[in-house]
Image (cartoon, rainbow, N blue to C red; front, side, top):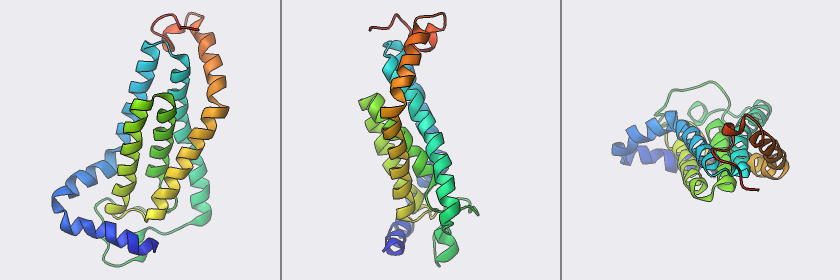
Length: 195
């Protein structure tokens, strides 16, 4: 089933030549969009003196790194080959790599940032969720991953972000409030935070 779904998405590249350049670009550099969304969320939260949202933005970025670390461990254990290594007639629109396919690093980071931002700032979070879903589909389209690779990445990243929002963000918020009360206040609040 996974291979069949992969082939269906990957064969879209044959029928949508007009999209191949954009899909290749997003597959390779789209992760930068998530860094931009993180930075915008941080700046907006700081401007509003919303220390919890600042903590949420910081955690969203940190959760991506933690989820990637966990994903590397899982990937080294599962050691699944990339689709272009095991299937024939795969349209590969990105550079081939020799690392594992499951879970997708791109989808893991995108899922973590998307869920982290959704919890910190709903409007930007919705945009990040859409961008993460597009990234997941894109990584299959360009031939880099199976659908289960990107689904696992999204779920892993999203779970790490959500769990950390409950466990880590309260502590980061307390730390942010302490910082806001001192000389480093501009890091977390452009104006005096509202209690």
